[in-house]
Amino acid sequence: MRTALICTSGAIVVAGATVGGIYASGGFQSHGQPASSPAHVAAARHIPARPVPPLRLLSVSPANGTQDVDGADGITVALSKPLPAGAALPQLSPDIAGTWQQAGDSLVFTPQVGFTAGTRVTVTVPAADGTVRSGYKSTFTTAPYSVLRLQELLAQLGYLPMTWTPDGGEAIQASSPSAQLEAAYDAPAGTFRFQGGYPKELYSFWQEGSDNLLLKGAITGFEGDHGMTTDGVASAQVWAAVIKAAETGQRNTDGYSYAIANQDLPETLTIWHNGREVFSSPTNTGVSVAPTPVGTFPVYLKLPYQVMSGYNPDGSYYADPVQWVSYFSGGSAVHYIARGSYGWPQSLGCVELPYTAAEQAYPILPYGTLVTVTP
Image (tube, rainbow, N blue to C red; front, side):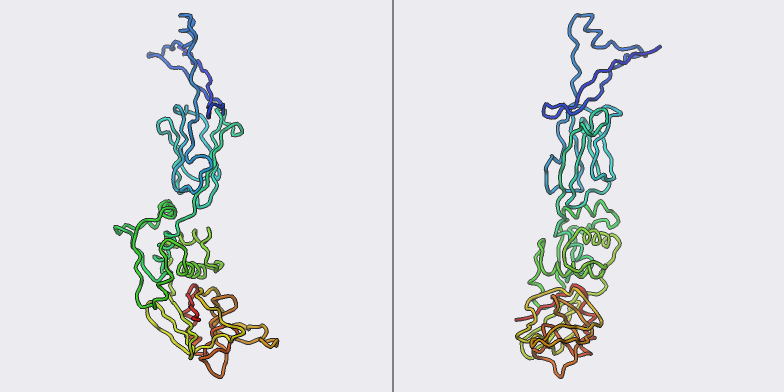
């Protein structure tokens, strides 16, 4: 026996405006008998048929225009009633892996991993015929990653002079990209502990949860080890590489160093490595007309040999072969150059060392080493 199915069309409505139509079907009696439709009943009783309420879009969360959204969270499309089987699902741009599931009258998208920081995401709710053009669009932007989380990861990877231990001892699963992304937006609680043996100046550069000199040096060191531009900036590329290094256990193998070029006479360069003073030598800094920059800077370029060229204060040109070069600020570097003596100002802004001392210092001034030049 054939059964009859009578359909009436409703509409998705947002704030009273029609966005698109969707189909609703009638029911069936038991034993395969056709159900009486509202229209048949109305005709028999001579009363108007009750209209099928339209399917309305109530909200999209995160809401349209929201900033600083946690990209690891899900997306919810709230409807006035469940979406009928076969109706078009919402679409995301950019498209990422994940699943849409019905939760009561709502649709919930759970990402497999999530959206990266600073991503502009558009959620499009199609019309009933599946077209996007007549659908409703909502856009939000994901937040930057947590500075605190970057500090935690770099400490765990050995690029900071400290350790980090999560509260409760429960570490993020290294092999779980979704857990790593969630932590990048919302850093887990934990404790930093400084390694002892460094001078007090080094500890003064630290500020938990905020950008600081120690973090810049750590980023620079990581960039240098991974063939990236050594600018000390936590770019999207840096973040992706740091998370990957955490997942694969790619730790810093150079250890942690800190150096002070003291311009009190006789001038000296002292280096601490892995919590111990391991190097000290007489050095030359810049003359008064070409001083060495005062402050603290990370080593950003290393060359075993080069010819430094430029102009002397009297205007004459120079091209000097130098070795064991570690640049820390512009054209200023720690390096070897032949001099008759060391321990007083005579360079053009660099920190000069005797040959043997420079050779010894070179490997313990890895990328990211903070070099402090005193006034």
